[in-house]
Amino acid sequence: MKRFAGTAVVLGLIGLAATALLLWWLPADDFLFVPDRAKPLADKVEVQGGRSNAKGDVYYVDLFVRRIRKLEQLLPFTRPEGSTFVPEERLTPDGTSDAERNRQNAEDMKRSEQIAAVVALRALGYHVTATPRGVLVTTVYSDVPAAKVLDPNDVIVGVNGVPVRTPAQLRREIARLEPGDDVSLSVRREDKVLDLTVRTIASPDDPSRTVIGILVDQDAKIELPIDVDIDLGRVGGPSAGLPFALEIARQLGRNVTHGCRIAATGALALNGSVIPIGGVKQKTIGVRRAGVDTFLVPVGENAQIARKYADGLRIIPVESFQQALRTLTTRPVKC
Image 1: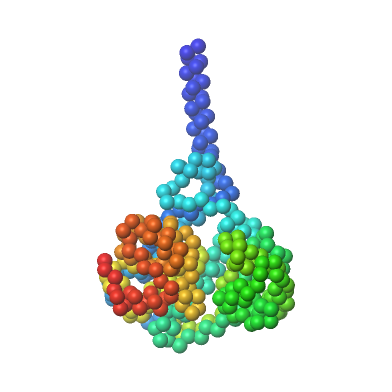
Image 2 (image 1 turned 30 degrees about the vertical axis):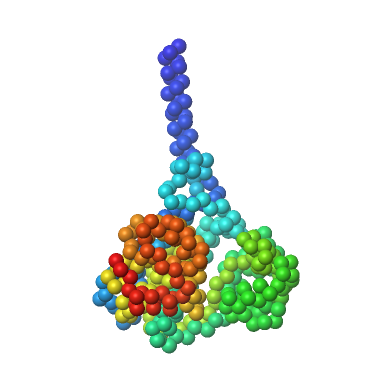
């Protein structure tokens, strides 16, 4: 009898271990944001005629985005340190596949590289041609009226008869409306301009704010006076615009590091404004783990989150690339 009971216990433990192992490997629908270490940009950015003998490096920081495992979903303490649970609908709002999401991230990265080059070269006195041509629709949420009207890669060029060329202009015109209003959009789709009507909604984050339920980026015709090549491999998304621009400035002779390790995050608009990004908690942890001295982040909520997880890391909030460049070159940070 005792032998039978002992065998049953062993079999039970084996079964429990097998179940735990299965749950560990089985992915769920939702996601985790997981910290990654910040990395220097010097060998990722190549600027025609550029070089810098200044000591110190500009760092970019990414994060791992992966499907949460069943065990991690059931037992939060099994999740990696510093990770954050993210519902599936937040990352794939229109029901897109992982492959489509990765493709969109790659396109966002390509635009980020171009805009960073424009912003940096302009700030350094180069003549750059960058003509805004409209507001590029990158994502349309599936549960909004716009989902039946707009498509990704549409370019919005007018709102109720008012020309718009930048995301800021689009937001300004939509903000004039009340949630539930119909809005007439002039949209460039392939080679045609269409007049489309979309019903606005209240923002899920702020019911007093009017939106149409899309994510957007800048569409522009860009001609650079010198070649700038940036290659981060499989890293995607727009949030490395600020460190790209700082590294371009460093290679063209601006001493932005003063012998220190400077990390930055933030997307850039064509006018140099720094746009808030996601995953700041994980990125701050990744910067700390790399032993970086100073971390530049977008002002506002991004900076508040960064300070919360800084643990001694110096945080510098910035509103624009021009401000970041001026701060680093005229008031050098201390290592």
